Length: 261
Image 1 (cartoon, rainbow, N blue to C red):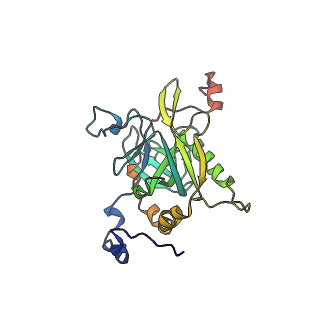
Image 2 (cartoon, helix red, strand yellow; image 1 turned 45 degrees about the vertical axis):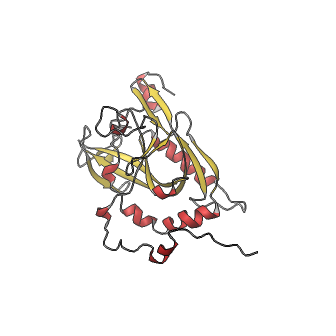
Image 3 (cartoon, rainbow, N blue to C red; image 1 turned 30 degrees about the horizontal axis):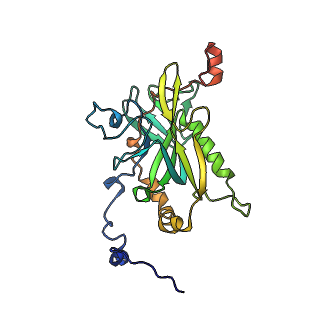
């Protein structure tokens, strides 16, 4: 029996797909970021003019449509990029973006790298995961940045991605699976913050993507992902130069202090 495709009210627009966007440049729109809300994030502060209803510390948040997703989400990672962001001191703003190792930096301080030609500024290594949210495919793609304490969890996630295999034994595509991300409250003697993990990374593989998910969303977006990468407004990234975080074990032992976790 021949399978029929159900028609929708928008079918008449299929032959006009992508029309009308010819004159849009990268400066005319922004790529949304997926952010983990913190206590100091304005959208989670009820006394702030930027407060968003329902926003709480520890929840995932879309910076463009202001949607709050919850403490746990399911995502499909499309691709990955690493960058160095240079910030002015005391949250003075983003200065520049650099390709990793394209400039000389002083990395003697674990949490504050200094550009040698501008040592008053701070360099923050930043991982960028380009993701689609399952059940919210029309909200994406989104850029999920990880820096500071998030770097170890980003590396762990990339390791899991590299280890994912197809039934044939071949390495699965980067975008082959749905992953669950969950925020965890971290604490040490200087404060607390939310991250996608604490002692362990709270990122777990759920399943392979479906054929429909691939054909309807992932494949079309993957075909233009490099254009998406070039259109990132890095000034949207929250300044994490003053993020409360753990000091490396080696540094803590030198000071004779207790390792928080």
